[in-house]
Image (cartoon, rainbow, N blue to C red):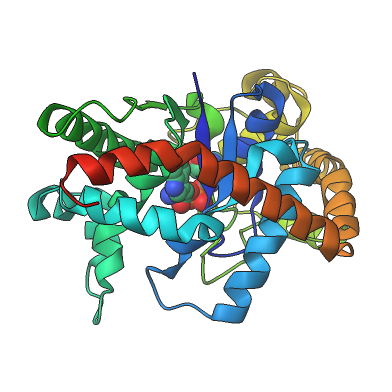
Length: 321
Ligand code: TYM
């Protein structure tokens, strides 16, 4: 069994990415897991090349500092040639209708002028990420489940049409409460690419800034601290964040606080202390570009070698090479 997942450096890694994904990857990781910075995926909308490069390096440093073994890591663009070739084969296995049906494409393309073609083909690159490495389990949030389903459909179609090459992947979803919401607008998920960052905690934010963002978080009407995600989403978000940092249950934690102020102070404190070692280790690692470069090169060599026989077989079976 191989587990594989990625983070797209479309902005600084958030508390949501950490509590919903990275923390779990570090804790549950086995020697068969693979995690990567999916920098090629950050190019489907207007992007700045210098910022993309530095965010990919920063993200790699965060993943290492969170406790994921460097041997399990790589950066997507370091195997861009292999992924480009496999993406093409998968585009030739996928219908236009299947790609255009993706909810994320419909949402992101809506009302936009000059939509990049890559926004449509994004799931075939994601399928290439998964299928090249032979991943059987793909831990992702609900928002990415449809893309993993498409990767599964394409693997099955390729295997039955041309010959058995690819492992069938399956999405593995986190527990329901693993979705962290924006502190200023709890109807939205906390996102790296949000325009307004007042409600978004980056894992590298300084303690003062984290404290301010949490104390300004939107809470709902009423004054009682109760855990009720449907009617009190702002409050529930804070309780879930506190639970994610301390390990308690949101309902039990609600009973421990009588005022919003006390809950906010406890949440700010818990987030600051959870992120402090991660921020310090990441900042230290970013001072050592030679070490990061070494991790990248070794990761690229492993990922490329791992996928080589699948890419060679797939090219041969489709009649190319
Ligand atoms: P990305 O970068 O959007 O998200 C990375 C991981 O973080 C989780 N996540 C959250 N969890 C809880 N609360 C939030 N507010 C929150 N925001 C994000 C996501 O569910 C995800 O697990 N396309 C993928 C990256 C990718 C990939 C792949 C994943 C590229 N190729 C192949 C798996 C397999 C993405 O953009 O993730």
